[in-house]
Image (cartoon, rainbow, N blue to C red):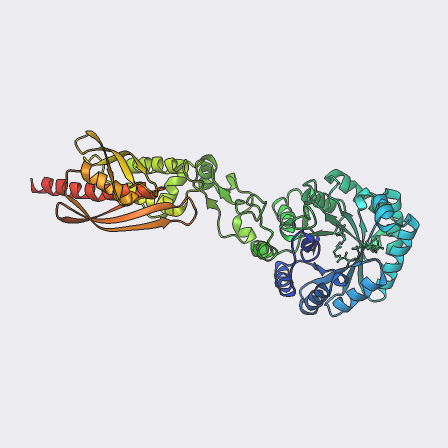
Length: 512
Ligand SMILES: CC(=O)SCCNC(=O)CCNC(=O)[C@H](O)C(C)(C)COP(=O)(O)OP(=O)(O)OC[C@H]1O[C@@H](n2cnc3c(N)ncnc32)[C@H](O)[C@@H]1OP(=O)(O)O
Ligand SMILES: CC(C)C(=O)C(=O)O
């Protein structure tokens, strides 16, 4: 299996993402992690662009020993000299010079004729070669460059000493088929091409950066360039983690491997995301929050039976502990049952059905049902007495305003099955509910204690209420959870009353 070198440019092209600005310490932290990840070459910055970048590149070159450190330079002596000062202490000093070769860039940006561009490139590479053992030259905007001109200038810079030729798709314009053909053309038409390695550098403007990089590998690129999480100028660069994992998973298709330690991918992605502030979208391949999450019932059932039904990458391969079964409105009974078992609940079929119904009802109200929510549902269901006469809340409404006293109207089913309705007021909404329930219930009830907690942290967290009551002189406790605080309060009250009734009935049966 052939080896493809990984050229990481997170600290240079990645930092060119709008809004990203890494300081020296942040760059060094990322550099250390890139070394751990096993990149072959790390582009640490653009030394001539600022004093800060110069210092960061220098410190990285002086410290990193596990891979080659490079820096970017324009095709002029000042940039090359600055780069040398920053990179000369590196384990394998390497320079990356670029110069645009497409008509639009040469005419409008550089304001140079093609001949002047060839001359500038050759001069710069020859000058760099006096200092650096390895010089990479990039034909900026190669994919919109005239092919004959590209072949001509590549031949000249190799003669001048370039050891790597990069053919960047600077504006993310090309397609996999075209990019592959570009590499074939350069390989077949540049007479001295065997003296240099070919590199691919893709941008994602049309969403094809990774596919284009894979095509380049199949057509002779022995080095691929990209960034972690695909960050970079405009729509970003090719995501290195995606390329490396694609090569690993599709070994049947690609006969190439990188040196990346795949288990370090997740940590690298997290670190880059945190330090750059570029959040990884949930659905991002390989490292997105949902990349190993299954929500729909049919998928969850498949994965529980055999993970490869819906997972082509194992989470462990990229340093993620395990997949996630997200319980939501698309989930089915199998995943719900598995979750209940993982929490240690042994539910009868009947209870499971009941809990699953409560769970599905909750998914209609909450965006994501958390483990805590499911635990609350399971606890409530498991500890609820079935077929025992009890008070049941059918409906309630509370009118609250800052001027009038809150008023609660409650519709209740009594233990004998009769439906009753009342309204009453209170100093607050909960008191109004409790006063109304008092009116509707035969038992003599006094509230001793009331506690309100939130299950989870989001705006749509469940409310959990614990109450202590005396019912007919006996102390009892009750618990209720619901998305609404007032509903949870009413449920907790009734739960406490019902528990007393059930205790009476149970002891009456025992005495008989
Ligand atoms: C495809 C890429 O990603 S290339 C890398 C892009 N990265 C960056 O630009 C980030 C860092 N850049 C910077 O900090 C600044 O642009 C600097 C310090 C490099 C230059 O700043 P300034 O001197 O103010 O120039 P400015 O950025 O406005 O213009 C760029 C100049 O470089 C020239 N230039 C562009 N590419 C090259 C090149 N490869 N070789 C030589 N000159 C070049 C432009 O023609 C322009 O020259 P002009 O001033 O004679 O018109
Ligand atoms: C400097 C070059 C390689 C570049 O970043 C590009 O062309 O996108």
